[in-house]
Length: 176
Ligand code: NI
Image (cartoon, rainbow, N blue to C red; front, side):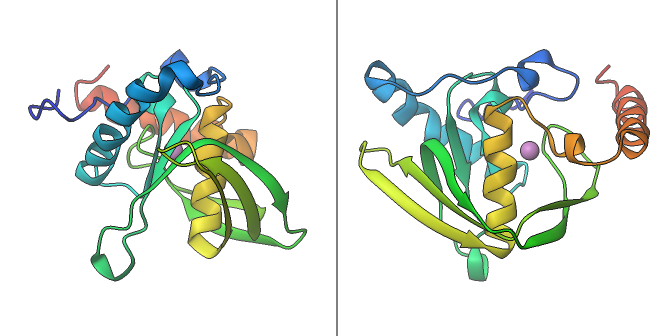
């Protein structure tokens, strides 16, 4: 368990909350989301990771934080109710990992470029166009809001191998 009280424990597969569909953030969630986002960012930096979705900390809300830390400087992005509104037909394959499947990686093929609409923490409508690693990361995080994990994009054979390996490693670490 984290010792820093601002840090949130990150749920691991096979926690069923990772498979639930998160609900949209509404007006009444504004305070909770403003409190949650910095804690999610802190937990993501600590892990360390480049993206974290609220369901990964047990909050079934459509909220995502991302930071690719270009030039090793923090550049946090908080996306409330993110929605992919356009995706390129061109695809890109990139190795992905996930804080909920520690130590596991696989090549995943997704649209190379995406456009997202979302709200920022002040509730303002925003739009972002992404390519490269950011495009992969944003699609991976939006998947989390729908209960989808990166291993769902690979073959059943590879997925089962990876999930068995994860279970074995977590057991060895006493996280059974
Ligand atoms: Ni993930």
